[in-house]
Image 1: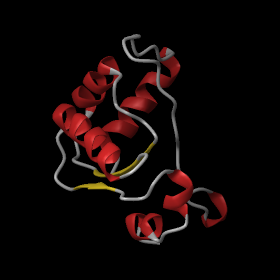
Image 2 (image 1 turned 90 degrees about the vertical axis):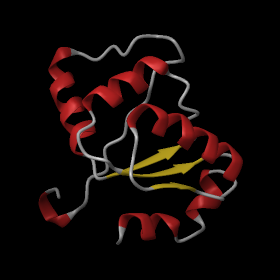
Image 3 (image 1 turned 30 degrees about the vertical axis):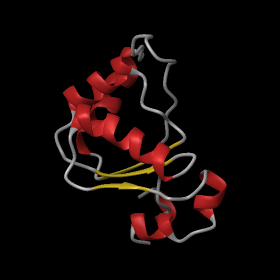
Length: 116
C-alpha cells in the first residue's frame, strides 16, 4: 500500500519474442523480488512468446501466484496461460472469457480477482 491507503499495481512491458531480457542492474533486484513474491498477476494482451523472459520469470519464481489472463477471448487466453504455466508452474490459473480488455473491464472479474 502506498501513502494514503492507495493500492499500487506495478506493470511492465516486454521485449519482442527472442530478444534477451535487458534490465538495468539498478532495477534487476526489484524485478526479481516482485516476480518472486507476487501473489496475483494479471496478464493482459500478452501471448507469452518471449522465451527469454519466461525462463527468467521461472527462475526467479518462489511463490505460486494466482494468474488471470485476458486475451482476445477464452481460446487465446487459455493458450497464453498454458505457455506461462509451462515455464513457471502455478497452483491456480484463470483464463478470462472476455473478448479483449475493454470487455473484461465491463465485468466484475477484476474485482473478484483482486478481492476488492
